[in-house]
Length: 144
Image (tube, rainbow, N blue to C red; front, top):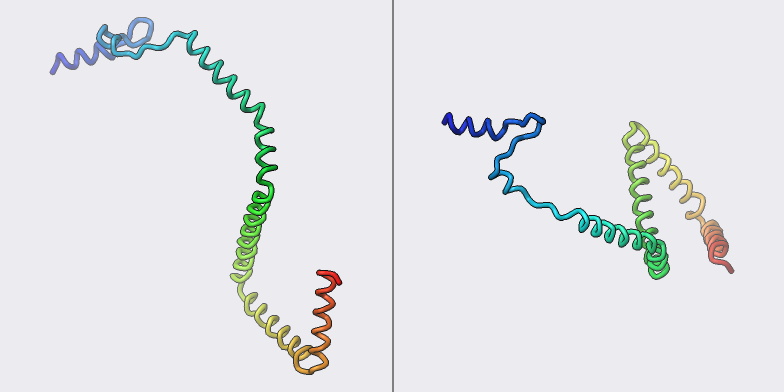
């Protein structure tokens, strides 16, 4: 037991320069590093490949965008519609959480619906007026 502690202390002892002293057996187990010239050549080769790729990157991106412009725009519009819908639902949920706001909006909706039915749907001439207003609105949007 005492000999093991002495060996551990010897292995962990430092040399006068402040470095850890290694025995000959420990020195043989260390991995060998490649010569520095090969490493520099490899790094230069990797660096040149990366710089070539970065130089041609705008060309790659523009070619990709030109080739897939319509699907990219469609995906962008779908994603923006989803984000807009989520934001609107979050705002409505926040407004709905305020006391007395939700019942107030419900009363406003019921009142507007009652007015609309009274104004446009009860009499035949008012229904014709509503149909004419809808046709005018369609012509403004679609065109004549």
